[in-house]
Amino acid sequence: MDLLGRIADDLELGLNDDVRTLVRQAIDARLSASTILNDGLLAGMAVVGRRFKAHEIFLPDVLLAARAMHAGLELLEPFLASEDVRPRGTVILGTVAGDQHDIGKTLVGIMLRGAGYEVVDLGIDVDPETFVDAALEHRASIIGLSALLTTTMPAMGVVVRHVKERQLAGKIQTLVGGAPVTREFALEIGADAYAYDAASAVETVEALMDSRRC
Amino acid sequence: MRECLELAPDAIEVDQASVVQRLGSSRTNCENGLFQESFTAAQGFLAATARPRCVVQTVDLATFAGLYDGEGSNDRDTPLEVILERSEALALFVLTLGQTITDTIRRLFSEHDYLVAALLDGMASLVAESLVESLETRFGRHIAECDGKSTTPAVLAYSPGYCGWHVSGQRALFSVLKPNEIGVSLGAGCMMRPLKSVSGVLVAGEPEIHDFDPGYSCCSGCDTLECRARIARVTGPVCAKREVAWICSDG
Image 1 (cartoon, rainbow over the protein chains, first blue to last red):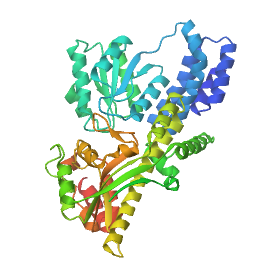
Image 2 (cartoon, chains in turn yellow, blue):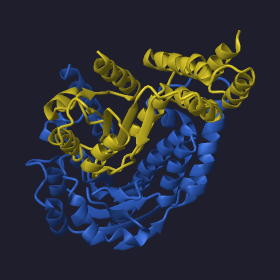
Image 3 (cartoon, rainbow over the protein chains, first blue to last red):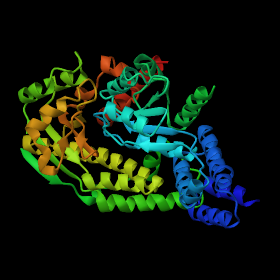
Image 4 (tube, rainbow over the protein chains, first blue to last red):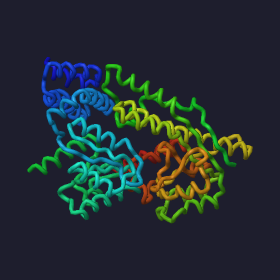
């Protein structure tokens, strides 16, 4: 098996030390950073994403793979910068105002990074204005909103309204998710998309990005 | 009675299957030892960083009824209103695992040690729930001792934010209990800081008082069924039958 295939396979198994070693070998072999990224690391994460969605593997496996992805990416980043390799897109993420739950949106961020997106994680208890300001600052086209409480879900609607009031609808799309959030709720508040879980969040972001390219 | 308790470290136990289930998994495919290694690491962080403490204060029904009304945002009908009418004793409580464990979870995520972070997060939630159960037991024993009875009453905890009790009820609860003594405060959205904290009221009485039909308005938006398992814990098979009937009738 070639070096890139081994990177992808070891990443899938979560073998971060091995992935780091293989990425170093690939760099030394003068493979381009974009090739190592796309045909090694991202290829491996794509398989992980597919298998997770098919319930062949589970969240612990995904998290180990994501750690291995990061181990490889850390080595690769300076070379990606010099080759001017850009991420597939930028997504702003955060938990809405009044809500301190962290882990859901953190998992979405991990999955999105694994799929090649740049993620700006604003953390928890984030004001509506901060989401929109961050999207403008980082030229992000998608804001991902998380809420874990029925009492904080309405804050998602406030962010969606802010995007519209600032004449940014269409330029910035909103994606909502979290345990109590439903597709119906997303429609009701006028969000652009709803994601049931971290895996579907990646697919939804990809669909939103594709819709912008059409 | 008002007590601040440091809970025993030996109460901090977690079983692997429950933690994995908490992560939304029935199992992990990891056969290379990495999962076990991460689980052991998370257990180590749990033991090193969880500092469980709680404050408990008994309260009479009239005082609690005022607290329960809070800011007038509860659902019109709630199961707890009915349960309270038949209760024998009540105690307010706030329990926390402390700030260090939350900081550790965030640090592990930021250092890309995702699985250890997620396992520690799941373990912390399970431990907090388990410690509330131990408070229930402790309060039940306390009531039995006070009343000179050989049998302990059935005690369950109810929390703001659940079963029609509006989360703003935290403010009234905190105004009486003042849990700053154990390092817990309220944020703007009535969320507790540190995050791994639980608050509510311990309700003691005959087992049957905790049993209710899930036909309240709050029940229609609830898909966890967690109350059924909790009720079954104190009422036994009577409730279990009802749970099956309810699930079946729901399709």
